[in-house]
Image 1: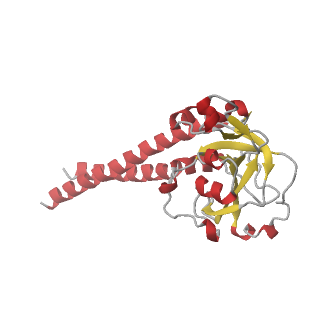
Image 2: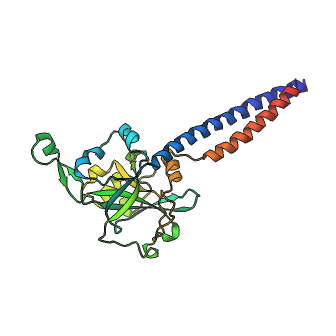
Image 3: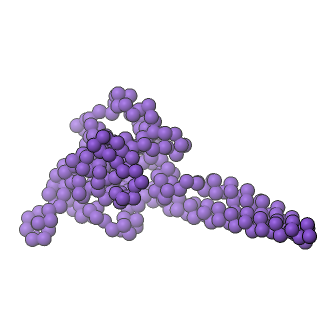
Length: 272
């Protein structure tokens, strides 16, 4: 009887640990595939995607499938004037779990603008009014001690054009965030493009609330002169998919539970 109980218990635990090991194996394979797909796109030639009149309608209310097929993880660069007087800091941990902030600024482009629905419907006039259009830019991460701009003396407004390399990312629905922003008290908890556009009074507020630009450290250059660390490619992939466990973690669980399942299987066999 005792031997039978031992066999049944070991057999049940073998099935449980084997299932956990197999699940971690499948998750590791899935994440490795998605990460390799992202890095393949990261390796493409960086092209200029500064909004201009001919492609303005491309970004305005672009369907999700079109964005995922043509633009997700594709490296671009944009050119414009970075307005550092308008800055939003959103609490965020970096990939090592260190507390800090994401630095959000508007980048004004000389091309772009907003649509004229009247001209679009009537067919008279120009459907796109060229303005000093803005794009919301996530410049990267800073540690807690750099929250005070006095600790970043080089982060000042300049009349010069800047060139930022990174990727476009789709903004989430304003109702998807758990903690709402409070712009009146300058309290920010999430990157709600609609909240940010209204708070900054951007001229193209209604058009820019669908996508934003995130600066990416493709060449592993580290922090810039202001102490801002652009998002690293692997961290961008993790954040995009919302992964809490990496492939390495799944591999450890896969091997650990797999070895346990083998041991329990041997115990079940000898208990027959």
